[in-house]
Length: 354
Ligand code: BYC
Image (cartoon, rainbow, N blue to C red; front, side):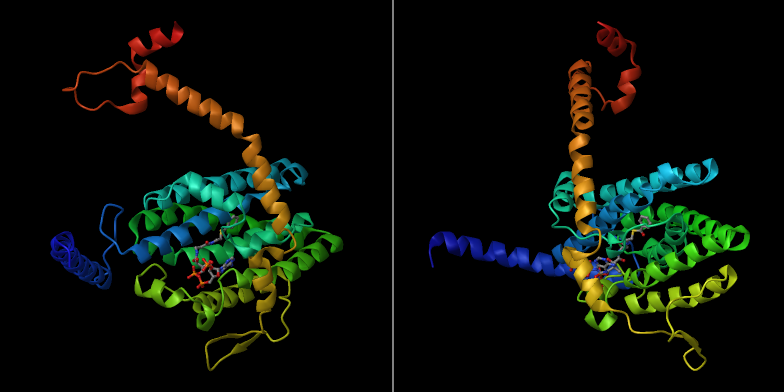
C-alpha cells in the first residue's frame, strides 16, 4: 500500500462510519414519523426517489393543462369558461409549487424541463388521451381530479416536508376541481337533452379505465412501492387507493345517473368493497412508453410553448441583470439586503428613470 493510500484508508473508514450513523438516525426519524426538511441529511436513494416522483408529478400538472386547455375557447357559457380558465391556471400553479419542491433536493428546474421536453421524463398516462367533447371536461374534473385527490391526500403526510406542504394547497384546489366537474356533469344529466346525456355517458366510458391506471401498476408489479412505503413517501399502496376510488365512484355514478363501463363491477359484502374487471395493463405500458393516442401531440405542444416563451425568459433575465447592476453597492459590513424590496428605494427608481 502506498503512503497516500494508507493516509486515505482511515479517512474513508471514518466517512463510512459517519454515513452509517447518519443513515441510522435517518431511519429512526422515519420510524418515528418525523418530517425530513431540505437541509437534513438523507440517503441518496431517498433524494433520487423524491426527485423522480415530484418531477413526474410536476410534469403531469403542466401537461395536464393541455387536454382541458383545448376547451377554453369552446366552453358553452361564460361561467363555464371562467371556471375552466381558473382550473387550468391552478394546474399551472401546482406544477410550479412542485418544481420548487423538487428544486429543494438539488435538481434544477432547467434540468427537469429538459427531461420533459426531450421525452425522457414520465408524466401521468392519463394526459395522453384526447378530449373529444365538452363532457370530457366535466369527466376529467370528476374522475381524473377525483383520482388525483385520492392519491394526493396521503401525500400531505409524505415524509419529505416541502412536498407534503405543497400538497396541502394542491389538494384543496383539486377538491374544488373535482366538485366543479361533478356539478357540470350533473347539470348535463339532469337539465340537458338526450344528446347531452349520451355525450356524458360516452365520456365516462372513455375515461373510466385510464383513470384507474392513474394509480400505477398493481402493487405486486410496482418496483418502487415497497421502498417508498418504508420511507413514508407513499402512505397507501397503488391497489388500495384504486379500490377506494372505485368504491367512491360507484356511489357518485348512481347520483349522476351514468353507468360505469365494467360489467364485472359489483359489491362484494365479504370484502366490504367492489369487485371489478381486469385492467388492460398492456394499454398502460404502451401509453407510458410513449405510444398513447396523444403522446406525440402533448410533447410537441410543450416544445412549441417552450420555444414561444423564449422571449419572456430572455426579458426576465435581462430585467434581473438590470436590477442587479442598479442595486446600490452596500459596504461589506451592512446587513443583507431585502431582495425585491430594493426596487422601492428612491435611489433605484432615479437610476432606472435615467
Ligand atoms: N402514468 O413503482 P410504481 C393531476 C410509472 S396530476 C405514468 O408504482 P411510484 C392532474 C412510475 O413513475 C396526476 N407513469 O411508481 C393534473 C414508475 O416509472 P419510473 C399525477 C406511471 O412512483 C392536471 C413506474 O411506472 N399524480 O392529478 O412508486 C389536471 C412504476 O410504478 C403511472 C402524481 O404524480 C402513471 N399513471 O408510484 C388534472 C402523484 N403510474 O419512474 C389532474 C404523485 C406509475 O420507474 N405520484 N407510473 O420510470 C405518485 O403518487 C406515484 O409516483 C405513482 C406511481 C402512484 C403515480
